Length: 191
Image (cartoon, one colour):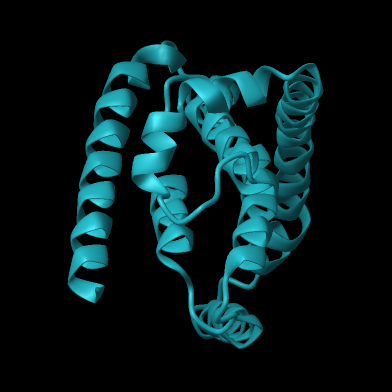
């Protein structure tokens, strides 16, 4: 990955020199890098909020209660995970964070879930069906409120930053359903 970034940056610098637009290099280094830092700091607030909220939900038992309610669904999606295993609560926290559009916060929770799933994996070099299913659900997850996108739209001056909510719910629901169906078909084919 570092090599790809190095080549892209080098190519951009060479093109700027050839076309006589070297001032763009300074603009990118000074102005755009500053904007990137400001953007990253802005996202830190949302991440801290959701990670804190998920931690409170876990300690209060809300996640365990939610996991109990979702047991039929999780048993269908992840039949290889034992009941009441910590992987289930980690998956639930990740799914809840994704549903509320806190994708950046969900990443930390997703890593925790994947660590728990790897603990159950007998062949550490090959992903299990549960790991594949979790990855598909994580990547295509249903988003009820895409907070990060709403923040970006609001920060960039959108007049109606919330107008994308209904289309986001529809698109992510379809992508999740298709992903789950394909995963289940591949699981059957693998056996």
